Length: 439
Length: 143
Ligand SMILES: [Zn+2]
Image (cartoon, rainbow over all chains, first blue to last red; front, side, top):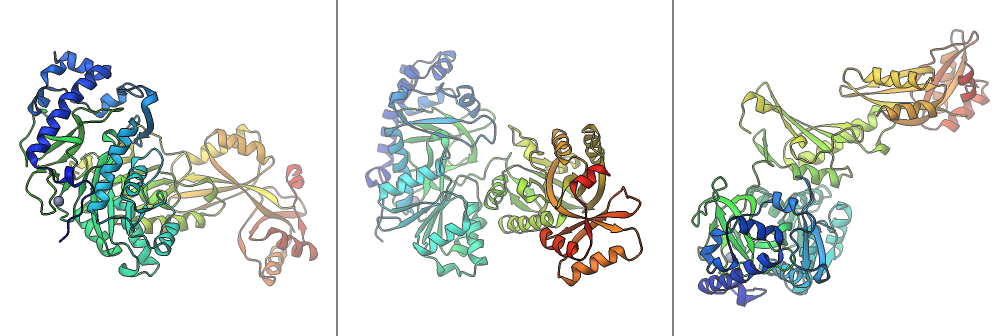
């Protein structure tokens, strides 16, 4: 079997050379950050650390961690390591868990990020001649622009669809014969269901692969998507803080994601003690960006729980692999035995034309979980009869059932009545907790 | 000729009707007719008032969710069979009445009724042609 890599020299570099490269880059990057980011310099000074104390890879353990809270504290310009005149791009997180994180990029940063995405596309079987449908959101969100840039680098015909407008997605997919779909897994599942509803068989489209990320998804979901779209579904990982998608990507073996180790150094730590754990042990994933110029990141705590393996991969890549993180405990709910992520509910709301203002109420009555979602109706949907509203509720319920596999009860409520909140807690009211049920 | 009706979305919880009626009272507007359509979850409170602009502003101030629909106001003679005649007339012309309700205030001669149909103009034309009097916003203000 012929092997395809976007940058074979890097992707198949012997492990000892990867480590040497990482060491070299780390020593330089720590000095660069110390000299250019006051926020991090203070953290190092507090520990009595100087850049010259970092001389080898193991010395990384001496460095202080960064958390999302640090990035929020430093908002907007506190983490910027270079003059604005050297920066060409801003991307941002959605801010659903509080104040946004705003990341900056120099042209080199953008190139590095897009090359990482290009590696992911090639690993999924992409090459010039492929039609890549990018159905991640564009704009501040990194999903759209990351895969878009990667697709350009590979030389694919790039379809910048952005997310939503499923009818148009399907029309373009069919008419232009898209071969690779990039979007969130929940949207891929939704497109799969929508194709089925329109009477298309799984093989009726020209897709061969999908690159799905930006939210946690399960192996079951992967199977469903692969079946409904007739494709191979690849996982991709990344955070706005680290650049965007492409920090790690899956190869054809679909056994964990190769971390782009020439640019990112991964550690697994005990989330309680901060102690570094040996390879293979489960803990919190921590990333150090080794060559980012505008928005450098040393020992950033992702809050994702996973483990790493350096076992040889039959794809020929030598980069360490991370297991699919199963989301953060604060995000996922188990309702009637089914895993439900708020992001899936948001996806459906946006697809159906609602605002993402909702509230989930879960309770347990007569040993059965009740699952209610309050959604703000659109002002134009309200008139003088209940029928219009109840019909809309039924349609939304059907779309939720398709995405989640279980039936919530939908309640449309008046616009602007669901409290706008910084935290995610208010999005979910789990009354089962009063019963002492561990959710 | 159609008259304006306020529809207010009310959640089925205690106190919502109080909020609505308080807001109307605060606007110093009189309610001329009303009806409620409800489901398990919510209700829609429909009102004909003497000054709907003022009422709407006051309701919105009280964070009520309001929409305005046009309905037909009909003055039927206060005698047996008068309303039946109107309903029959519309049915004969394939105009479906979605709902109807009566005014609270009545004059000596007429009972006023609100009719909700899909096509106001068509309904009005038929009614007028057949000698049924319509109610105008002016009539409502003068009741
Ligand atoms: Zn591999």
